[in-house]
Image (cartoon, rainbow, N blue to C red; front, side):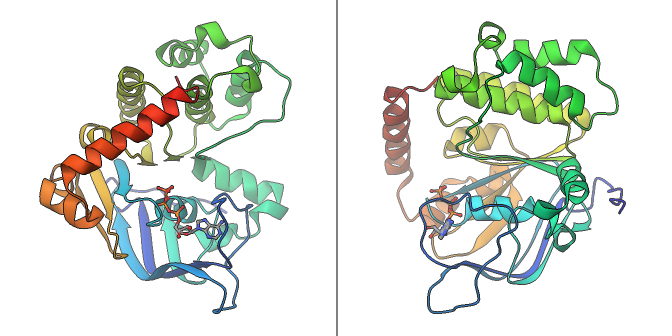
Length: 292
Ligand SMILES: Nc1ncnc2c1ncn2[C@@H]1O[C@H](COP(=O)(O)OP(=O)(O)OP(=O)(O)O)[C@@H](O)[C@H]1O
């Protein structure tokens, strides 16, 4: 199966009439690949009903209160979850084609070439130090060319030089998040999906990582879709924003318009000053629990 070429003006992602619900309440949003929603309407958490929306190409961030469906949207766009009704096209591919990817290594490979995911909390079961893992991911990824300098640039820009000999389990939360971003860039999928990729980093580092990440994907013309709780990151480092309303609506538009005070306050149903205070407290809690 060949993935279609996209022009810059085609939407990166197109939802049409999408229904999605989870079979039951479950605190872990990372349900395994290929599981789709159950059919029992009595025991479900409905997340989307008849959702139709286009996400432009370029860099788009997802903004909204907890529980409004950002992670679910990312996993649907990345063909890791599938709708109960409706269609989703990602870079021109109907994601239904990947429903069996968890059972078919070739199909899984094709899906991963199209789109890869950085999950909110990633764990690895490997004894290899991350320096070796970087080389492995780079060698086995989808880049047409793999110059050694690119690997060095990514390691250096993400400030991972001093961590190369450690196993993933030995890294701080923040260093692990930076390593996972490095994996994602080295892997070379056409669309990168990232669910809160820098939540555990200190503020100055978040800025540095985002500046590098967004410059990098722009220079390669790769599409990036990410969620972040820090409004200033979305404002500075995205072309477009998907604003998730507490009432269940989703609006898309240029970041400068979507992040205007009135719009954000209406979507979150919270005054902006309170929102910033909540955000700061949330970050402090994370940093006190071993961030960086
Ligand atoms: N695996 C799951 N099983 C059942 N319900 C789920 C699952 N994952 C998420 N939900 C529910 O679906 C709804 C949307 O959750 P989702 O995680 O997509 O929102 P979110 O906007 O990403 O939230 P956050 O900002 O807290 O990550 C919530 O009501 C959540 O409780």
